[in-house]
Figure 1 (cartoon, rainbow, N blue to C red):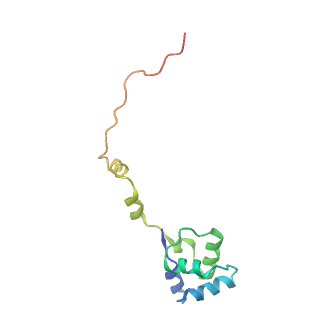
Figure 2: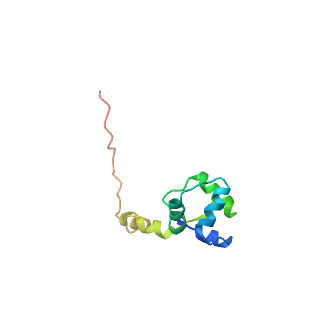
Figure 3: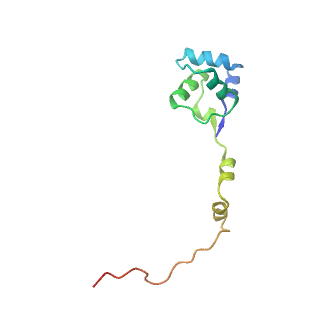
Length: 106
């Protein structure tokens, strides 16, 4: 996922993280300067759903506008075997013939 906070803030005329931090605090979300810096300059590893609600209210947006999927990155993480199986170029699995079940004791 790509974090799109700065773009959504810019669309609302918010150009500084301190300004957004003040707006979030006014909406009830007090966050540290360090956490705000991480949200503003990078892509956070985690965001609480309650925090995401407040961010969306302040920026007047939906979560899907802040979190953008990146399917190419997902495909790049897939192991080579799984990727080749999707294309049909993987190993062929032959079924076993006959009854291979064990018989119940007599």
